[in-house]
Image (tube, rainbow, N blue to C red):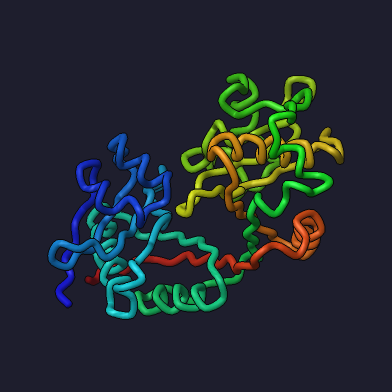
Amino acid sequence: MEIQMRVLDRRELPGFRSYLLPAAAAALQREDSSLLALGAVSGRYALGAIAARLTENGEAVLTDLFVDEAARRQGVGSRLLEELFQRLRERDVDVVNADYALKAGEVAAMDALLMKAGAPPPQFRALSFRADSRDYHDHHLLGVCLTPQYRTPEGVVPFFQLSREALAELEGAEDIPYVLSWSLLKDRAVPDLSVAMVREGRVSSYLLAEESTDGGFVLLSAVRREGSKGSDFMKLMRELGNRCWYWKGGDFPFYFSAANEHTAQLGLALMGDKCEVYEEHICIFFLDDED
């Protein structure tokens, strides 16, 4: 099979949208120069796509890599990675970060693909879970947020309504891990779907979320700071669930990660045995100067 590569832009987007996360598609639509996206084609048929976001410190974050099921195991993924890496070198990028959550067989295939391209062995980062809201309408804690009767609790605010002062305080907060910070994730998080608990004018806890490729939503970050009450997390989860429900116009899949065993146990206790389990892996590697 002859494979050709295309640099994607807003004109090419309709043919490759199904292979990209909504955040990447939106970046192409607004012609965001920090996103580099490539598509693979054979003749008239799209085979898959890859995308990376260039950061302010000169690195790249691999955000998207998807190959059409009919074209897998034919070298398409390797070609996409090779082409992306070459174009990143041309932009003087030498560090690539990859963070992905897949089912057991799929995550192993992604690990092998990255290592074939020269990356070190990816590391396990967390367990991830997939839940479907249709299974939770009768849930004693979450069911209320999937109804028109739900009301936003006092103090819960979507990110687009936060004051400049509150956002500025988050940007420089030393008590928030960088991997969970608004600074790192604000280009991916949807402000309408990201919610905070504000106490005494300060964000005491928050959830950041984005859309997923299958029409659902991904919890990117969950942060609880000093001054947050034990019930705040549940209030934020209900608010996020309600916003996702209205955004989607009905039921939706929902993904979240657990960085440690304690968090995994809490998630499973809340969601029950209806979750599908995924593994999240992370890989940081350097590009050499050779093709």
